[in-house]
Amino acid sequence: MTYVKNLICKECGKEYPIEKRSTCEDCFGPLDVRYNLSKIAENVNPDIIETRTKSIWRYKELLPVDISLEHVEINVGYTPLKKCEKLGSILGLKNLYIKDDTVNPTGSFKDRPASVAVTKALEWGLPAVGCASTGNLAGATAAAASNVGLPSYIFIPEGLATGKIISALAYGANVIEIKGTYDRTNRIANLVSDKKNWGIVNINIRPYYVEGSKTITYEICEQLGWNVPDRIIVPLGSGALLVSANKALGELRKLGWVKNATTKICGSQPEGCSPIVTALTTGNPNIIPVEQPTTIAKSLAIGDPASGYETKEIIKRTGGWGDAPADQEIIEAQLLLARTEGILSEPAGGSVIASLQRKVRSGEVDSDEVVVLYITGIGLKSTEVIAPFLNEPISSDGNIDVIEAILA
Ligand SMILES: *Cc1c(COP(=O)(O)O)cnc(C)c1O
Ligand SMILES: [Zn+2]
Image (tube, rainbow, N blue to C red; front, side, top):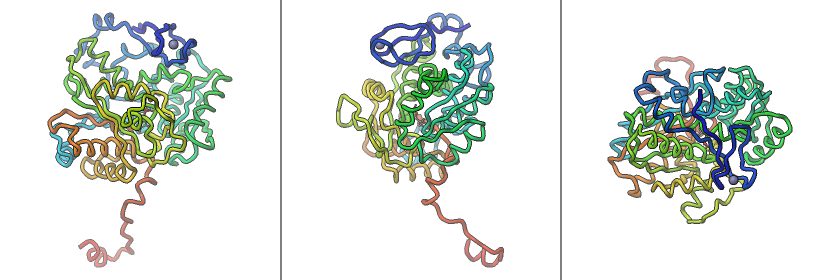
């Protein structure tokens, strides 16, 4: 039983059946999955959802797969929404929350979209799956594929943190490292997968992939007692996560599961790769691609973001902002989170915290707003980034007196 209606082109409105297709044949616009929301509202409600298993599949009616069939099951989602008193008081906020997606099975929110897309590929009987990855999607796709016994082909640009590559290899993936940027990797993965009948989760089955990301926002609202936050701050790579947040909030409103209040949707990109934020701050109607991203926040180093334009429009429409901190601020914020809340995030998390800090200072965030930071990936895969900013361990031959003297 599924409540999926069809695919619809976000540009021209042309409709398609649910099939392996990611762009409109008339206008090349991106396709979006639509649901029969009134049917869902008749059959499901928050009370029912609250009784269910604590994973993304508790929102199964709002996902484009049939989980009565074989599906990816590695315990993804229902991650903590943590009220941060200490970090909040440092930043000057009374109601600051962190959505801690570092605790997903492969350490990032990418487990959500990868689980849904790989499940769809399995349902369709595709021979293999894969992705073009800035790092985290590699492990997420590889783990989901191995869980359901599908081979995986992971395309990555050169220069990623070794922890991200090694984990994909450990899950049994075939990893193909392409010279050059992520955008080049993406084009090549697209060409190869066209020839084979592979499901490349974030390319040729992208409409299904992005649906998985909605679950992080459903959870936030559920964890706030079926209320929407006043403001969310989302790290931007392709922009898909932010677009999915907007869609999730819209669906919950239409279902009547949350009040009709608006949420200001804000985005953060590192200064060295900020095509969306630049378009917002300069008022340029177009997103101008960044040819050579230069940032330590590799997960966000997408120079030509697939959902860039839509992301910019959502931020404007909801009264949010875009912000682009420097790498130095990102690392400091990453360490601030680790040292106040005990959560070691990767630079993407540092980016949203640094942006919030800058915007509180400039008076663009009120101290009593309910603010949720999307902390999307764990820091343990990319420790080389922060290592240069940390003290060396104290080295000792074991002489107690000397150790005591050093630590005095
Ligand atoms: C992929 C990724 C993002 C960005 O997601 P998009 O949907 O591409 O915008 C943010 N944070 C982390 C940790 C990621 O891996
Ligand atoms: Zn179209």
